[in-house]
Length: 167
Ligand SMILES: [Fe+2]
Image 1 (cartoon, protein in one colour):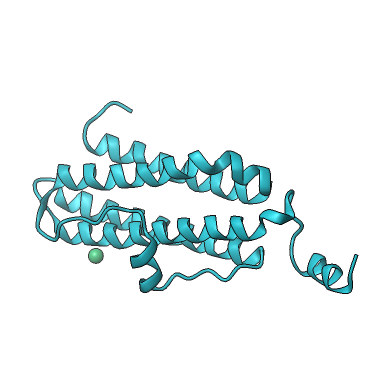
Image 2 (image 1 turned 45 degrees about the vertical axis):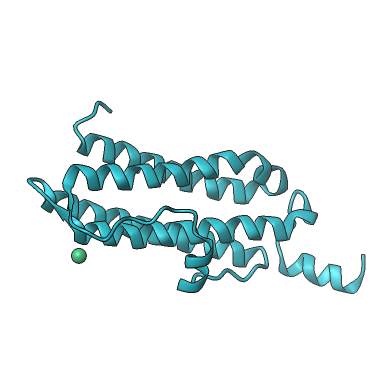
């Protein structure tokens, strides 16, 4: 082992597959962009909602936005822990987010819940699809992402019940 690799092994956590360190960082970067964008779109819909239950949807969305911001922080800090430098600036989010933007207009409460729910579901599904390969590279990052998916899926349940659908 060279002096440099000893130093790296002291500073950076060893991965199950150390050759995948940059790839895991890139996965976390993409997810960071999605989560930040989800929080921005959530705020947009928080301001756009109209209708009989607009107030409760308006308040509920703020809870979701807070959770997405916290998840983004957890994802970014996992990237830093592994030796990457995440970019959460608006330019990176605009260039790389896979979350579909919403039309800027007033929107009925039920439509807001549906629009937000399907975007959160899409983010969760994309992470689920990557869990196996990320786990092969680093089980600890996989564990972080499992918690992210768990939170997103719990939110989908809470959004479903807002629509009056069965849990
Ligand atoms: Fe507000």
